Length: 273
Ligand SMILES: [Zn+2]
Image (cartoon, rainbow, N blue to C red; front, side, top):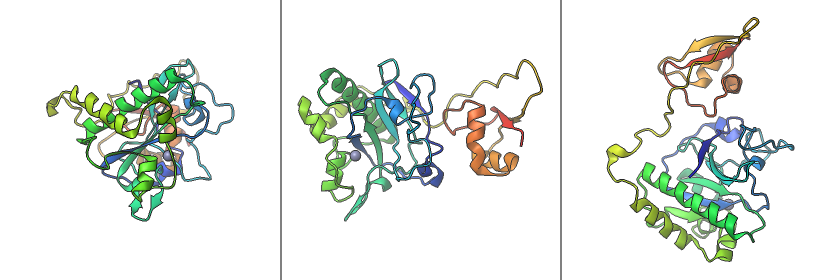
């Protein structure tokens, strides 16, 4: 798996900031012929490529949609997975049915569809999705074969916890796959993951410390350097330093942060007011 991270801090779902305890995973495919991650994930981080329409999902949108991850093509044509929300944040991927709302318990990711005839692309993203589910099942101690743990969007609809969509079945069947074969592949992948809990990442949301930002070589700095202390959040720093927590994306941009996660001792550039 080529796992990258670009958190959708500008999507209203992220700003809503609700959390869940993940009990399973819902698999989606986009339903549109566009295998390029840049269609959904942005802005360009140097790998994604530039989306000339600016219609990626890391922005305020008129629809309530937001995923934990996307699988598709980078600008160079290779396959990657982008995490776009913290895994324990409540996303907007499932919709609801008479028996509940899948968003309350399930992680959700999209596989970017192409024209649905390219077997090589299908196999690549199918395998990438299996690996993502292996990773998440290991992280949250989920059994992929247990009822309702890994489901396709259409199965969520059948179970009464999702909106009426056919993804990803309509694509999987074209290449002899199904959610059953998908779950079996995840189970097989998990069997090769070491079961020693000491080997697992105890806190997958904690990144390695970032190097201190370089000061500019010339001219008057237009920022101050702030050192992160215990219990800080980007929101709180923005609120204290810039007068509004909602300005925290400015700090992310200035520091080239790909996620909202910060660590004690990290040095951040803070824009001058
Ligand atoms: Zn879907």
